[in-house]
Length: 396
Image (cartoon, rainbow, N blue to C red; front, side, top):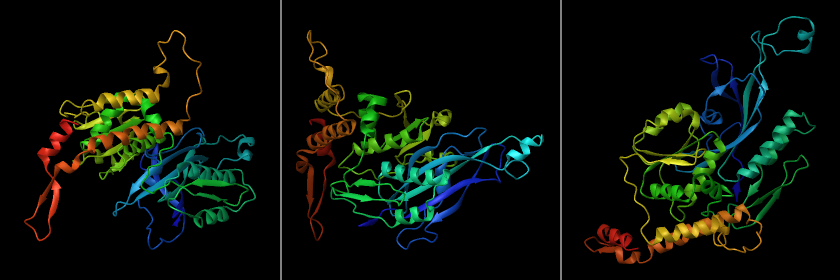
């Protein structure tokens, strides 16, 4: 069993801001208050709560939710679910506006709203469950319900969930709610929800296949969108298509504005940034850029992107077309059959991932012929013969 949550913090706008519209985030509460021995509190988390910068607003914006992924020094990932809402901030005199001031006829300073974030940090990746838990905590806080916030968080932190095995876990935060977790059959299996189908819907089959080849050939891939959650979903989907291979380079689905210099890193990466920075990222010469909102990808001229070998490329494209567009086979029929309800999007994700898993099986068949045995050491060493590997992929 693993601890369900190892940290829950409350982050708010810091009043001492360097400019007229942008400020700094500050952690005002965290649970637990002291680091656990096996899990230190992630430093700099306030940067990721507002990736575009902490800014005041003249109007109360709708609450938002997205998931940030942090990787520690041991390559362990921490999934940070952020629910951000806006509260009336202190005015220029340092006090909140009240109805009495308005009735007295005095001219009160304009009311502004500051962002405040509830963050749930976990080693487990259950975004929808985390959204429900944070939404419940937010509702209790905003509506001043007769429920202890400390009790809700204590129940959350004390919940034990098996990492894998396909079992179900039913728990409650203590506010009349019931939360259900369905664990994956194996901890190495990626949980994508509907993100893979959404990525193909946004970019199309050919563009996603190009990005797939880009990450396999260790190129830099950068997503940009006006939605933080779409950035997170796109990075999750692209990485899941690599299964059973594991991506070992920098993986930052949502990159804060203060860390944009990371894009100049010489190493491959999968990174997402907000579209507000699209003018800055187009200056990058060695990065493949995918526009999730516009449905396009940009491959620099200096990058020669290898594609899947034939006939696997054509077979994969046809298989994806039949899964993503099931009416393609009957589109020319004079008397087409009645339209049936589209398959559930989550099932669509599994069907698409099955195509890529079959693709890997076809690519790697016969790999033993590429192994070379070296006996000059005390124990024989087996490694890949590069020339033979190239020939294998050439004739795959």
